[in-house]
Each structure stands twice: as C-alpha cells, then as structure tokens.
Length: 170
Image 1: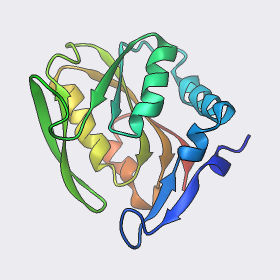
Image 2: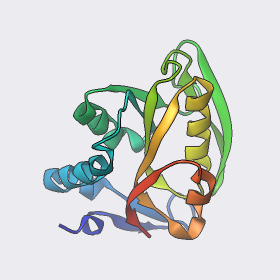
Image 3: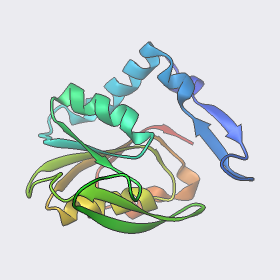
Image 4: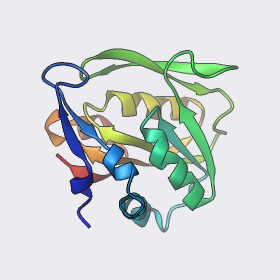
C-alpha cells in the first residue's frame, strides 16, 4: 500500500503559494489508517511510554490511535483559549505566522516518558514549542512522530536533540 496515494495536494491553502497536504482521503480509508498506525508504532516496540501528547488539531487523529494502541493516556496540546483550568503556554513561529500552544499544568507528571505526535513537520516551530511545554512539566520526550515531513523546510533541524520518525517525506 502506498500511503502517499492517500494524501492529496490542495493548492493555495490556507493562503496563496502554500500547497496543503490534505489527509482526509487517508482518514476515510480504514486500511490506510491502520497501515500508518502500524508504521508509527514499529520503532516504539522497545520503548516505555507513559503518555502520548498530540498537537491540535490534525495531530489528534493519530495521537488518540497511538495512545489507544500503546494503552496509555492522551494529552491534547491546544491552541489558545481551548483548555479550561490551569495551563502553561509557549509562543512559536510557523511558516506563515506565529501563535501559542497550551497544555494543562497537570497533564504530565515529572519523569513521565512522552511520545509527541503531529500530522506534519514543517518548519519545526510548532513541534519545538510542544517539546518545551512537555519538558517544562517534567516530561521526557521519547520520540517525535509525524505522518509527513516537508524536508525543504528543514524542521528536523529544530528537533535534532530528539528521535524523529516521519512516515512520508516531501
């Protein structure tokens, strides 16, 4: 099965000049979804993982599946104003703007081993901000996993101190 056949390009979205990688055809196909899940899990066979943290919103799709498959808790890392209660926040830059990410202060206990997941690794700013949030709470990043990586944006460079696994590279 060729996973890349289930990802379509949408030109000029969300703004002119951007080629958006649409994963909805992948999500609509149960066999393709399972194939991706198994590829994401394969390098984790010998790792102890306590939590899966995933970045809003497309990271949640496989983040929840990973947490379920690993039989561990799920931690949402969200955009500002989406989490109730006590949170911490981290500012970051992305390929076409800047924003903040937030996480609950009690989401990760000191020493917990965390798998971080998102759908795409682009410039690396979003993922780096998420790693900072996890580490500020005392978590240890086991691996950063991505469905796809846009190699030409060199996001992996920002994550060079972590193990990084991407299923598709563009």
